[in-house]
Length: 88
Image 1 (spheres, rainbow, N blue to C red):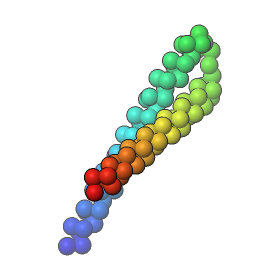
Image 2 (tube, one colour; image 1 turned 60 degrees about the vertical axis):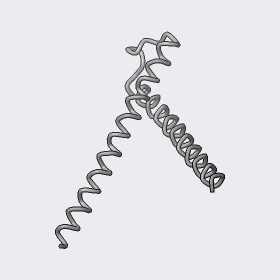
Image 3 (tube, helix red, strand yellow; image 1 turned 135 degrees about the vertical axis):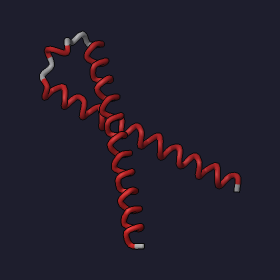
């Protein structure tokens, strides 16, 4: 029985790790696209940007995306709770 519980806990941990990894990959891919789009709008060739500067821009974009996602999630949750209170 203990092995069954240990295996279940391990599977849950692996699942959450996989979800977190997938989320981070999605955020990073979106951030890279945004940075490349901003550089193209400002007519800055990608070759002229150093790797360190590009990485810093991507990290900043990741933070902005995560902030926006957090705001949307909390607004959605509050709206759901508000509707729940209204519907009783």
